Amino acid sequence: EIVLTQSPDTLSLSPGERAALSCRASQSVSTSLAWYQQKPGQAPRLLIYDASNRATGIPARFSGSGSGTEFTLTINSLEPEDFAVYYCQQRSDSWTFGQGTKVEIK
Amino acid sequence: EVQLLESGGGLVHPGGSLRLSCAASGFTFSNYAMTWVRQAPGKGLEWVATISAGGDFIFSADSVKGRFTISRDNSKSTLYLQMNSLAAEDTAVFYCAGFPTGARYFEYWGQGTVVTVSS
Image (cartoon, rainbow over all chains, first blue to last red; front, side, top):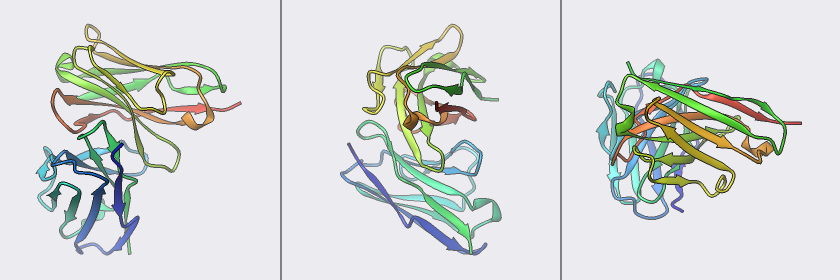
């Protein structure tokens, strides 16, 4: 099973700052990686697919990069609505999620 | 507008059974593979099972293999999850999600249904 490890567990930032979230795979997943945002009491929402493609309706301040085992989700200039939990997910071998990174207001 | 509406959750005793449903609308259900993902209270997301668009391929997580069965009825645009031998650790919000055949991500998500396993 491919294990995805996200870091940090919690990121404390202020609105307007830049967030960089990491996702590391235990073995190569090529670019079969997606990112989701989840707010309390809500379902996850697809942000990024195939490592670097923004999903429909996702603002340009969200970007994804990486391939193989190292991936990054970058949020430029955090908006108040961006404070949430973010998960990465791979589909190279079965499906697995990372444990999540919480982006909280500092 | 795409909608996925889960139902069938509730309180069940350990060892009991429950059948979840997910009614889809707003997209061509028969062209989409479907998945169940669960989230235990205060925890992260866990993939449970996936079924291909035509229903001929099924994949399940080891944690539910032999206990949970995913199925679909394309004539009713509905996804199911039959859950047997439930245990306390199965307590979670269960989400259904859909993705185009060949996609490597979950595009559409329902709002979830709560399953509580307790005596």
